[in-house]
Length: 133
Image (cartoon, rainbow, N blue to C red):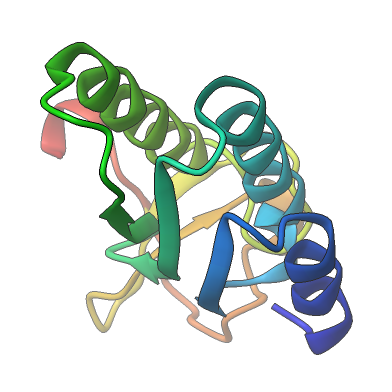
């Protein structure tokens, strides 16, 4: 993600994000929406330490803060994180539009819309069917 968008996320969500962000610009809105939900519902129960693209989708590395033994709250936070990661499977890394998981000829996985198929300079991107995951 470009440095301007990273700084905007960190300025908009200073309590939640103390993170290295290693993904493309197309997931900015997805990350921002996630942060807004987390702040509205769970305040400072979690800090996000790292956000990255892993095997084609977003991955969050996070730390729970002392919230007691509230298993229900932990479960809801984990669900919100997982839902965001799953949404990234259908969101173009480049532009943020609807997309599909694609497998390159050299076995890298990307989430790209049809417009950005050539973005990673891989000539033989193959669409990954959901049942192959």
